[in-house]
Image (cartoon, rainbow, N blue to C red; front, side):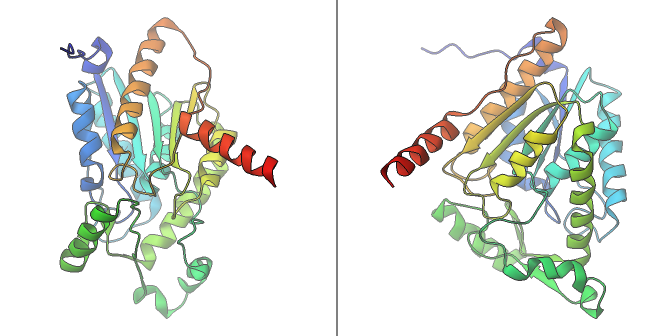
Length: 293
């Protein structure tokens, strides 16, 4: 019989601020939050005014201020406070880590610094210009298949939920242009300031992400100023990696990195960067194709 693994002492005093994607809800992170809580971490997944679904629209500076305030509230109680985000929430998490260098760890899941995935419409770049036209108050970007999911059964369920409620556990059915405009501003800010982030950093990204291509993860890995950096590549998921086929892998890697970061903060041990087995396997496949060409 397998003996249950008890949470480390660090986990019991370690809170994690979880930030969902643009115009969405904490439901996106429900599985991850529950997993981390079972591992002994304290989790907090807030709704942010002007950012979360149903809360209106505000400037990205207000998103950052609201997220930082949530981090500060946790830091007043817990020894370690980490920040984790999904999609644009990961970009927002990076902005928090830049302003709160005391953050224990930064977990970037499907980080979105550019909307450049294979399912993004060719005209996406025009929306930044359309914001300054009368379309600003009328246009809404409508989500469509595959809804960030490789899992087809879950995709059907999500499509039904979006049609009925306008929002689902993997995000909203549509995103208004003001929100997209502010998201672009946030992404530009984070791209310019990546090297100022010193927080331990975990990047988890799907190699077939249809919303934000692997270039986003590579951009962070190449420019972030963290001395402890780990990149995990997934090969059986799309953008919504906290809900898709490898959500258990994502949750386990997050818990492991949080635990290692907290423990190393007392021991001073700094491990070498890690390349995931998924990435190594894909690199071998590409090498074989190149040799046979």
